[in-house]
Image 1 (cartoon, one colour):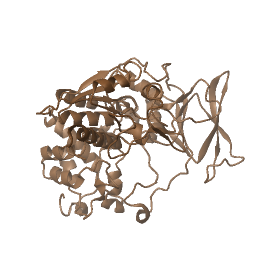
Image 2: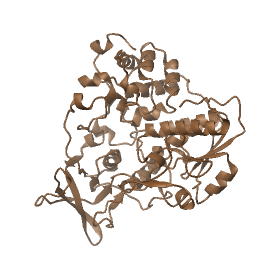
Image 3: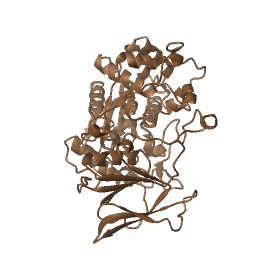
Image 4: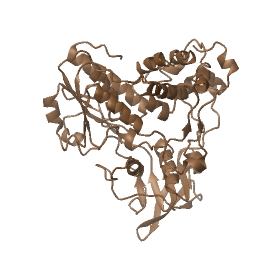
Length: 484
């Protein structure tokens, strides 16, 4: 633990943001880093709570040993802190920026609404480790002669590839896009995580012997059957990218778009790439000088809000069919689990108008072009309330209500009839594999991440990638020293 009386003496502090009026003028990260002494003070607040719920199973999916590295930071031992953090998490600079921090919800101090600033400390450890040169390639000293292909270079694919490379296997990563990272690069805006952090990890992995093949759409450019023939194992980490169908009349009007093509386009602009992207519409989508409506209440919707403001939107309205949650949860009823309570993202705080318990009835327009969104209030069962209809002016609308599975035009199309899929009651289609060995119905073919569990958090993808890597290593070698 940190300082014995730290939680009594030190108030919770987290990194501050640039003012909204400044940060909406650029697409860079806008968090103002805390000084080392400030971070150490926050780490000192970690208490000897007996049962550290923060690191699982209620808290951290990768089971970060949070009390241990908080103590190391407090004692100014940054090198040991990053070694400890890396023992459970390949990419703490990713999760320290984009994870919603269920660990903080599970912190004992959250009973008093003042949890340890775990996410802030985690990011600081990773950034400090890069600054001091502690993050270097760790190539395997013994090579197994086994060859593994990883399809997809999102967080699951990258984590698995790094683990398998360090186990001594020859690893080849196949990525549909022009650069590695998956939706980490092309889905998450730069103002939440700049992409140089992905580039640094890719360089580290290359130094460890991992080979990246970008611009290769497996199932189209290269057949899965060929990969299976050429490799001892193939791991499918294709993500969950097919948007959930909204079924809203008027969806074909010009100006109505799914959220992900919009985010992908802007990320490609910021990365100085052509906006054309495999699987996504290529017509430019821009919010400058427009009234924007975002349908959906999750992270993807929030990313659309922040992107629209940075492009110069006049007004952004976000519609959420769920009722407005309470400002504060009933701690004794829900702690240490993730609570439903009012949360305001940095993007929403930049000026979004939020409408709760509202259903989108129809996109309306003139001459085939969107002019407004017809809405109504709903009851507790999400049924429309008669007489509450209203129209919001809209020149541009984004549908951000989630994803129902991987693209079906490549890997799944080739393996149709051979690969066992599961379709849930909401129409999501995932590849069937358990979370112990991650094996699919096809020999030598494993799967992990959102393509298996459905859309989820980056930290869950990292966990699944790591576990799948161990399962593959064990299958190839008979045993494994990789962590489970």
